[in-house]
Image 1 (cartoon, rainbow, N blue to C red):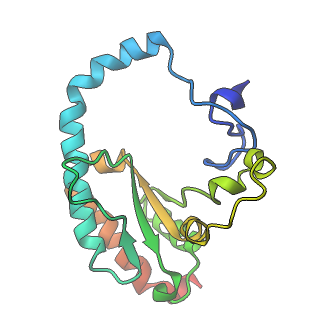
Image 2: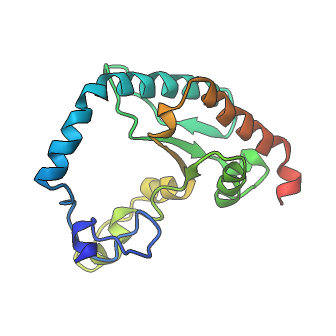
Length: 178
């Protein structure tokens, strides 16, 4: 039952893995009533996340090997539920993405890999959609994406500098990480 109401995830799984079919029906009416009291903070939190995301994006655009997700200029707002960047291991001396993530976590930067593989490789979807044409771009993104959750973007603006410094520290110490 837990798996069905939690998007088909496994209690001991790795985040965005879905071994079962499931839904995202986790919010009860009581929860909605309690959470609605927080809606008065939404605009301020949205503005802070957007501001910090712009700051972080400006840093990352200057670092070879990290490409932040594009933000459509026609959009006036963006929730930045998850801040995504593409990691190019070759420009980091061949350091595998998971080692890059581990090194940033050692610097207290909460990053993660996001999806382990494309949706059409999730176990409950393999059989019904076994004739799906491969999507090499999706596969590549699953191997290269590094994510930062939205709660990080609610931090003070100067804490975005900490992310930059940690990334630069990892880059400067690649030899010792291999």
